[in-house]
Length: 81
Image (cartoon, rainbow, N blue to C red; front, side, top):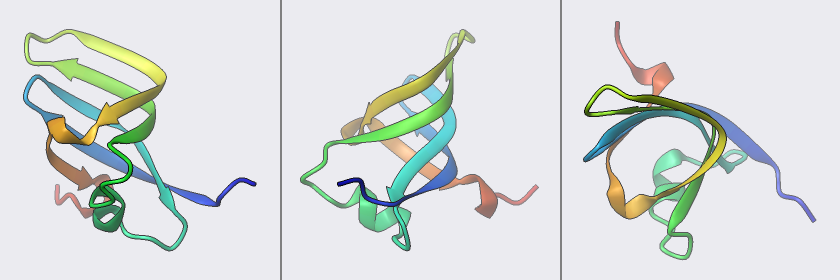
């Protein structure tokens, strides 16, 4: 049985990279609640673009990001330009 998921376009900062992509959270849920779920140490990110601190750029359709390494995560829609 598959659960409904909502894609949240996000910008994620780790110590060594900046990741832009879609975080998949339960429908109707909040990103913060999903991140606080200690039973799931990894978050799936799709259509990810990874930029390292030394300027290298990588793209992948799917990655699993360990939540322990996230410093900042921001839904892109909340960013002010």
